[in-house]
Length: 58
Ligand SMILES: [Zn+2]
Image: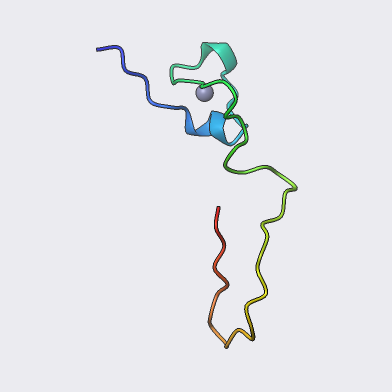
């Protein structure tokens, strides 16, 4: 059994273990889920009522 789960920290670009990490670091996926400074695009879909949060696709 050598299955290594994908490092969630690596996906966020905040893994501090680097090559020594015990989890998997798939190439090309760094920062694909959340990039600091990258604001999500919120579509303007009419007036939002109070307490109704906008739907944000990540
Ligand atoms: Zn890692």
